[in-house]
Amino acid sequence: VQLQASGGGFVQAGGSLRLSCAASGLTFSNYGMGWFRQFPGKEREVVAAITWNGGNSYYADSVKGRFTISRDNAKRTVYLQMNSLEPEDTAVYYCAADLQRGYIGGPKTRKDEYDFWGQGTQVTVSS
Image (cartoon, rainbow, N blue to C red; front, side, top):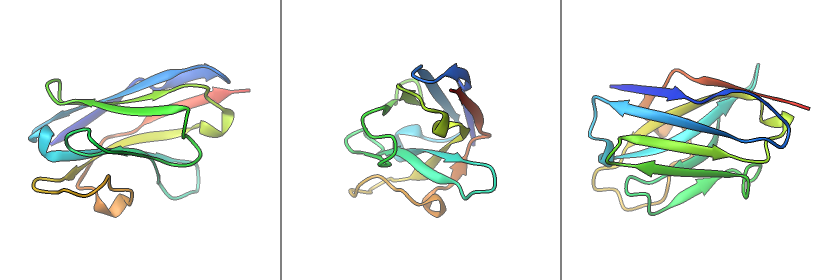
């Protein structure tokens, strides 16, 4: 299994970035997907998550109204559109996959619920 995250970079406050996470080696439509971020010296925290069919999504309070998670099962890819970026969004962003075959609940928000992780992509927002 491989999750390849991309799209990070350097942007000024108020700008936008779109992260992508391409999956291989798994049946993508069986997996819920999540985006997490990690600040230096801090625990990894959930940013957004989406169920296997895209029917339900979750956002951390700090990003509601600014970030949008979406997925394209045909392309085996999950996205995180990040708008109105703030310096406080500066972190390493990770995508993760959670097996949800037969699952009918909401998006998973705990990092220990996820089975596979991508390598992380740095997002830096300048003031």
